[in-house]
Image: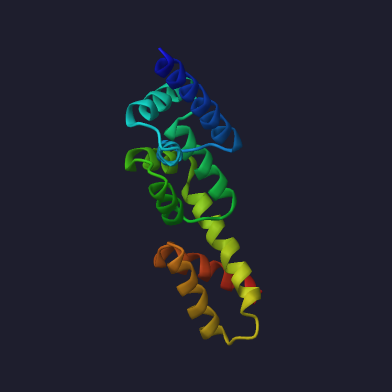
Length: 163
């Protein structure tokens, strides 16, 4: 009888801790599982808490992917960077693809590349034009932007820069 009461108190305490963890910011299912694992709970108790949080709509990987995609898009991140971050958080490939498809358009991509090129142009102001181009292209390639799109935007920015 005391064991049942103690287990109920432990479950209640862990549920409050999980809700506090979720209150800070949106969390993925993997983050919540990892958090509960650190509390050294039995697997069945942790699974019950996760299920309860999902039923109460506190954990939703689609919402997590959507919010993070919007946030990273506002910070000029490439689709590649967004995909990698969400995959590290345990979000499924289908959910990531749906979020990118919904929120990331070609116009956004072109605008982000344009902004990045303009930022980098001022950063490499003292370099000659070919060295600038090389550094900017390699920087954007490492960030996950494809060469063809970068070249297209570079040509547009170069014409504007010449005028």
